Amino acid sequence: MKSLHQYHPIVIFFYFFVVIGLTMFYMHPVLLGISFLGAVLLSLFIQRKKFLSSLKWLLPFMFIAAIINPLITHNGEIILLYVNYQPITLEAIVYGFSMSVMLLSVVFWFGSFNEIMTSDKFLYLFGRISPAVALLISLTMRLIPLFFLQIKKITNAQRTIGMDPTTGSLWHRIKSAATIISILISWALENAIETADSMKARGYGLKNRSTFSLFKFDRADGIVTTVITCLFFVALISSYFGWNYFAYYPTFSTIELNMTTWIVFISYFALIMLPIVIELLEVLKWRSLKLNN
Amino acid sequence: MKTRKIISLLLLFVAIPAVLLIGIVLFNDGKYQIISMIVVILACIPFFLSFEKRRPDAREILVIAVMSAISVAGRAAFAWVPAFKPVTAFTAITGFKLGPEAGFLTGAVSAIASNILFGQGPWTPFQMFTWGILGYIAGLLGKTKWMDTKIGLILYGIFAGVLFSFIMDIWTVMSYDGAFSWARYIAAAGTALPFTITYALSNVVFLLLLTKPIGDKLERIKKKYGIMQPNS
Image 1: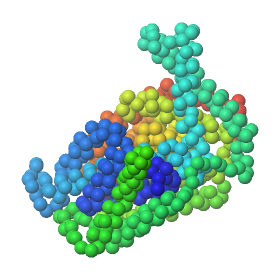
Image 2: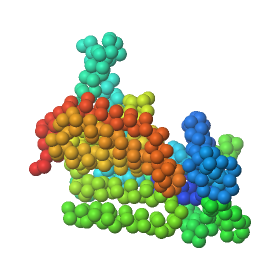
Image 3: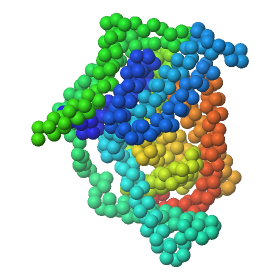
Image 4: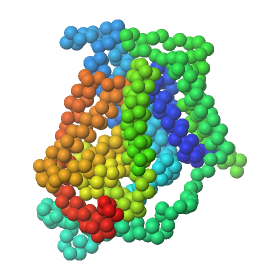
């Protein structure tokens, strides 16, 4: 087996597509809890720092979003109190919190997705669907750092003739900065034409050109894809029969625990925990390697 | 040309209503956030497809890439002021000078590329579509004399700010409720009002400042190298 980052981009995309889609779809408290747990664990595994610092503004935001719901929605049967003659119901409060948990899970899943789906993998995937647009995006991504570098060069040159945007009166600064941007854009457009001609000279757009990529779909990719597909299929079937349905309004449905719901919960749990298991196995393998030597 | 048009028309009039219908029938408790995402992605496909099928010239691709990169760099440079972004202005200027298709691509690519830097999320398709459509509209308007006047630019800037906010608010509401509710939409639009005003204001400021100088540069490149001319 390999670590998460080494899997084929298609497998990674497929997994996150399935998980984020199902997370957005399920409002069942147990399934929400499983997805939330998985999102938090995976985030802690692969993007601990970013994840912990994002909590500072995410948690208060989601808390506010949760308490706004009972003020807007007055559905539900269990009335707790009246505000301005409008009932505040337990169902609306619980629904608000469930919604916030769902949104938080989606945001966390996307955070992990961004961490694993680096720009080269993203462009590789996009290039298979739409090569011209992928080329457009990858050129854009390359031009951004180039422009920042060029701004430094232009600024240095401008400084020698007294157009320094960091000194002088405010008007002088703005004028200098505007000149730099103007020079940058003229240069960028001319440079673009040169790049385009060079691309053409090297055969861009000719037939029978092959492309090179570092990604290989191997056995581990195949196994993981099969596992995801099977678990996704179980989820689809259970959605079709409504086994994972849960209503908040007019009042909560009961959570039944029988053979079918256990299958639903366990298969979903397996799907959610898949990347964490992969990462754990990897960590264990590295540790045992260290011990052996 | 013909097949491309048929595919686009099929997408617009068959696939999108079909998704809406299936969505409403299948998920009767309304999972509109997923449906709306699919619809928005489908709506972008005809534009990408027509670009793909045309086998665009390398120079054309590069010029669009430059404009997208500048707008992303602008978004990064203004990251410290919330909602005050030059992306719409750059997209619109590209649209004015290089036509609707280039406008759409600049907007959509700016959204994807800047989200590669700042993080993808469920909002990516919505930003792609909104900025793309704003570029497309700018391209159509650029063929008239309207956008040569200051009033035209100001009106377009306000319109663009409101439309951007409008679509993003719909996204907020749908992602929260799984359905669309007017009560929540009004609440969201109300809290987003300062952002809407900032969007509109930044659009107007950047359009008034940049349209003339950048437009001239694009015009010059077009003439000098004969790109994106109707007869080339």
